[in-house]
Image (cartoon, helix red, strand yellow):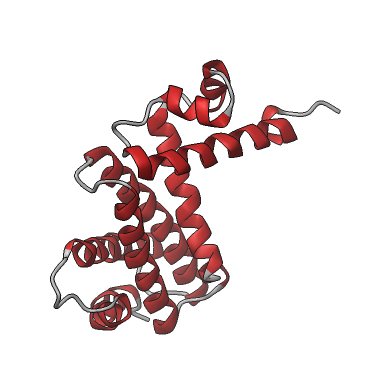
Length: 189
């Protein structure tokens, strides 16, 4: 039986090593300053091996964000849930914390970084919310409602993370405040 590259344990191990090395360097240098050479040096691989896995550091960043966001969803078991106000609140809190944590690892002034975080977060939020709505039998189109809600959740969480004032509520309090706005647009059964 022939193994495909992606099923080969060496491929998986090397890809994991690249991702891990990148995530260790990112907080130290910031995304703009990190080079492919930095990543390959840290991982102990050559540049050709890096390029066999990722076309550039932007693709690596995109994949890293995708995996980290997915891990947060799975850690909180939101992927195994159904729609409820409690689960939606937990999802809003998770997005707030994810964005806040991501911004602490990389300067938010780096537009490529923030753009990739936004793209991955909204994409995965939409997918999760759409599954929840399809299970519920929503009267509104699940895809349309999920797109609107994913943009709303992400936008509100981003606003919360950018608020550095002493009056900023905790992620949980913020989620309680915005929950009615988002829930009203999701479920019209």
